[in-house]
Image 1 (tube, rainbow, N blue to C red):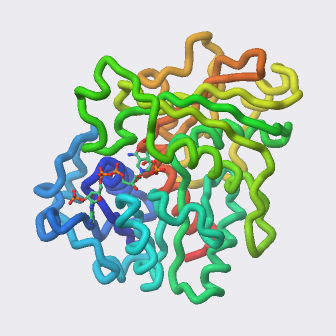
Image 2: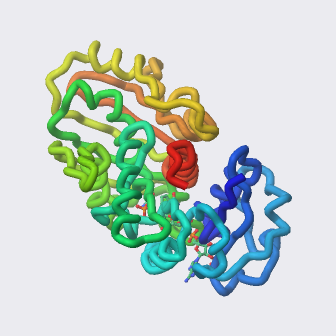
Image 3: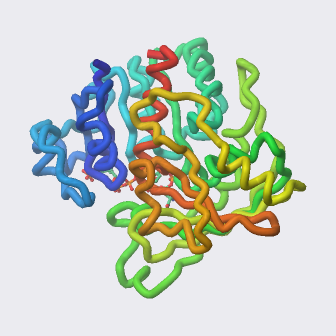
Length: 338
Ligand SMILES: NC(=O)C1=CN([C@@H]2O[C@H](COP(=O)(O)OP(=O)(O)OC[C@H]3O[C@@H](n4cnc5c(N)ncnc54)[C@H](OP(=O)(O)O)[C@@H]3O)[C@@H](O)[C@H]2O)C=CC1
Ligand SMILES: N[C@@H](CC(=O)OP(=O)(O)O)C(=O)O
């Protein structure tokens, strides 16, 4: 078994990690860390469990460690669900201590030698792990993209062979994306907030790195442009995206590409049967009805029409965060980077 830990295990994303890792067939959950406020307590006493799935009793007995490299030095992989300002330095220290870091935080996503991975799209970018080792890092850092970026880029994966030169996207993002303390009820109930700090910038840069070309040393970003408008809406889980494409293909070609898409790998435990699912109903996808497809790992697309334009939706804390990182770790293990 591979011993794993979670940094920031008590937060919105950290709890999802614990949920997904508690009974994982390959990974043994050994270490949970959080802030000094939680360190020293049993996980069951430190965490305010807010997920709509039962509390994983086995994890409850783990004593929460402070978030230090020393606390996780015996892990093979740690998953990072730390706030970005804490993650930047901590992840470097953990990787320097010889541990593999699969991070959900934004701190290192755009570092030239750090892969920004969606397994279905750019598994080959894991080759940057060797670049990190060559530069003297004992462990490694691999990141998953921003949650809205994952929904967009995975929805675009079936269309990449058809070619497109530009993407315009408007998001309707769930409040769980802001973390447990992220947005007050008075601010979001009966309301839409048309601003999410740094989100549009991430959506406009990350997809180009993910869909870029890796030559064995560095990633050359893809040439298409992305223009994003991001909105917070009163939905608990599930980010919805309206997407417009600059591409010269028929709706029939695009629909077929969505319907015939299969992931370029198989056999990873967290992998859904369908990474991208095309829904024919005229009023789908919807967050409440479709966010849990594929155990929260499927991105649903639909409403394809002239433009071309379509709607995409996925679970932001599963496919958009913890599930994405766990899938990356499974790929790293399968590809023998450990
Ligand atoms: N929510 C989402 O959908 C997504 C979130 N992310 C990213 O994931 C990360 C975590 O987000 P989220 O779970 O929402 O955040 P939360 O605020 O819900 O949780 C933060 C976690 O980090 C711990 N922590 C906070 N401050 C410190 C510190 N100074 N030292 C050590 N540990 C600390 C907290 O511990 P304690 O409980 O003890 O305070 C808690 O475990 C962020 O980088 C976020 O941007 C990415 C994609 C989606
Ligand atoms: N900003 C995202 C969640 C998030 O934290 O993203 P990132 O991992 O890029 O910081 C949201 O609000 O839904």
